[in-house]
Length: 483
Ligand code: SF4
Image (cartoon, rainbow, N blue to C red; front, side, top):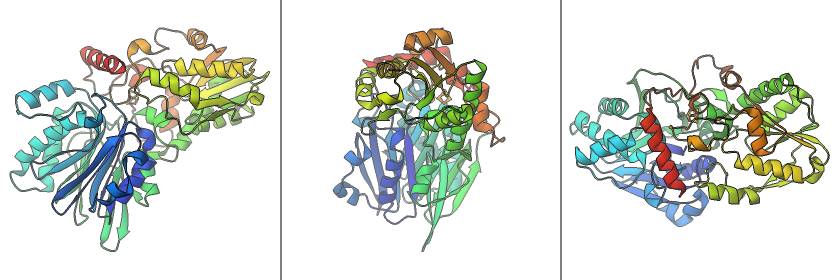
């Protein structure tokens, strides 16, 4: 899962892009890049690491123009080296820059077609380069020498026809304008905003609304699934529904990935997490558990834990303190790095645990290594009993749409009962959210969302084209990346 921002019409677009990337740094800490366009030239800076470490005053100064893109990367397909940092460019037709959030399910097939049939050479192992080349080839044909929004719409239609998986894309056509499109399943979000300027409107598109609010853009309707959005240099917006939508937004964005101050699909992530906590409290009660204190595992579980504590009438205490300068364990590329970083990441305040029955609340349980270490930490701090609640149901299937959670054999809940999971992580009990409750907590305030992607819990992949050989291939790539 990555994050992006695209800007058109703002003086010195790079400043807003930089601020936007800092606002979505949580979506990927592996690499980042910014590209702008001005006076017939691309200006690019990319690198590995955090936004604040890659960009300096000197290299931001040279990224001139009022049109540009930025990206923070969380590795999916590809080696994850510097050559895979986004955005990417092609010089034909017109000059195109592109970045994305998601994962191309038929990457290997498309890469083979591009290399052997279209005789193209790709620079990287990053799947957006495949989308970019498919798009560029289609745009060359549909534009036939003259760029028009309808030629752009036709090119996006060709991408939808060819590229499988989940992808939200932002890009620009040099000298013409900014674009964004989102696969027909709308698994990954795209928020759109605008701001009045002395010369008309400036526009921005981003993976999360928080980027727009922190850079002073007013939210307008986002990019719909199957829609192709284009904003030209004069600020004229053209939207076309070029593929039939089958909307299935990712439910896990609401659980873990998005910032709580973001709105996705018109739903407040913060409020959805409150409802998750309230619903989880009912499961806790129905299973007959009791506890003296509710403690969140920071940060993403805080909101739900507080709501759960209030619903149960149990004190809420922040007994675990996080060192905010250590990266998120879940998006550390290798398991070794995850284990090492956890030891430096959380510390327990012993008084909050000593002699108590503790209810820990986390967003999910993936491999269980982190959960086990936290349970040990809390027992070491003197807890009498440790109950472990998960805001989401058991994770048992790999995500093929861009969240590198695990391979099937690594999911702790796969082929284990709740009691067996509890035993594995050393807890007295685990309490899982049910899938209907999770989906209900998200969709309750937006009945227009009739379906969500829940594949990592249910195995029901909404795109319908995920074969067992694709799952195996993705699994092999992830295992290879771990070593
Ligand atoms: S499989 Fe899970 S994490 Fe992946 S897109 Fe679907 S709900 Fe989100």
